[in-house]
Length: 284
Image (cartoon, rainbow, N blue to C red; front, side):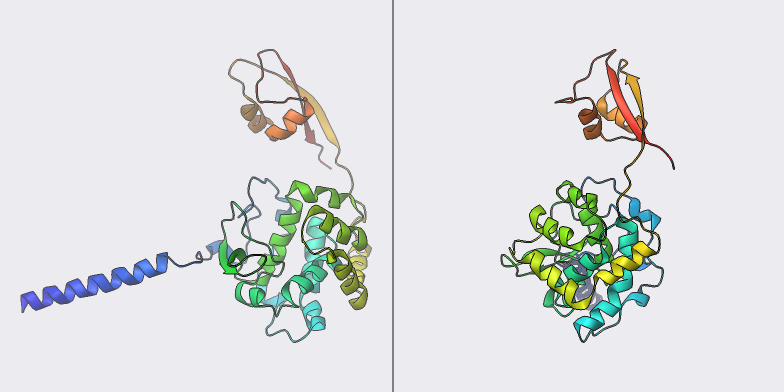
């Protein structure tokens, strides 16, 4: 009897162990508690960025407000996500028309296989450093890794952060926030898509569905059409024994790369007594 109980216990242990192992080797990561509560950390999954402007426009506590499924048509897609696109325009300055047109094109108006599987509306791939959920989908190559979200609104926010935090898209933010044609061609120039007709497709969608009306509404309600340049306070730091560029950057909340650019430094070497030029944005 004791021997039989021992065998039963061993079998139960092996069964539980196999199930646990199966869970931990799954292809997707478990959603974070923050995402489950409707909060998206701006730096989550974005490599090396300190961009946190999105904190001024936190995502809504009730994610259900922005989506219902299934989406039957492109017009219904627009009705469902126009408010979210305008929300992102106020936070980041990306034209709502561009966000909507990209969403329509990349997700097949929300009906594409990738979007249905991952809530990824913009075809953003994992890239090095992505810490969120992921799944695999055939695109330019077979079985490519794509970002996965537990709600579409996280895809819209990640799209904004993706554009705003990468240097190759920086020039776009100098365009007027309601100039969707320049944005469309700029995205192609920056390498967002390999399709040579990508700008024309975005513009055709915006014109067909009058998506620029959503840009005009946001600007009319107070968003500057042209980005206002930052005003900086300039000061200096004299290098002392033990100082490093990294230490100075932490002390004055400025990146090492920005210090190097301000001082025309080609490497991280500094010497005692050297005068380092610094700056910080003036408070409005």
